Length: 164
Image 1 (cartoon, rainbow, N blue to C red):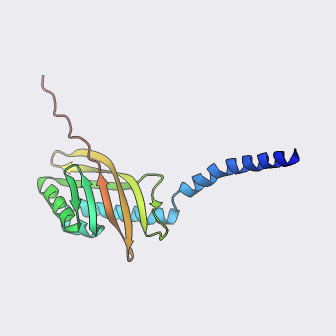
Image 2: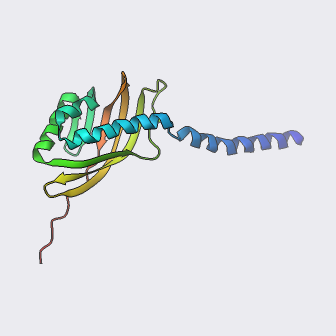
Image 3: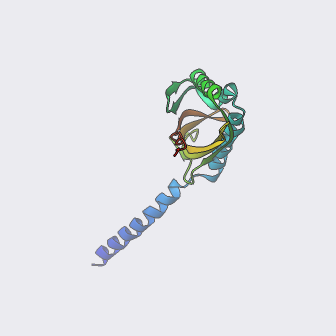
């Protein structure tokens, strides 16, 4: 009887400890979080300069950009996609952030992470503020972090003003 009680007590202790351990394991490493936050915030002033050539180094050679216009494969195609966008419109006040649970290490090397967050910016001209979300796989190349996969959600266009 005492053995059954001991086994049950041990099972309960493990059952209560596992969720607490899982919550700690899912918490992002603060140092890694700071590195990735610095990376995405370094993207902001470059984007605000509307300079596709300066955005290209944020991506690996084999990166994939996922945008409403489709998939863009490789750094050159991604730079071309940004160039086409910047020819159509200009942006300012671009701000990026990580969500509270990001980033997450992928694999065992610590050089590849999955991150999610949001962004906001102003479309210059009509001065419309827009915001959306992004997710990505970010890898370390030397001392730098780069997007291997960068998926961006874009809000629908604003409704035209209604006339009476």
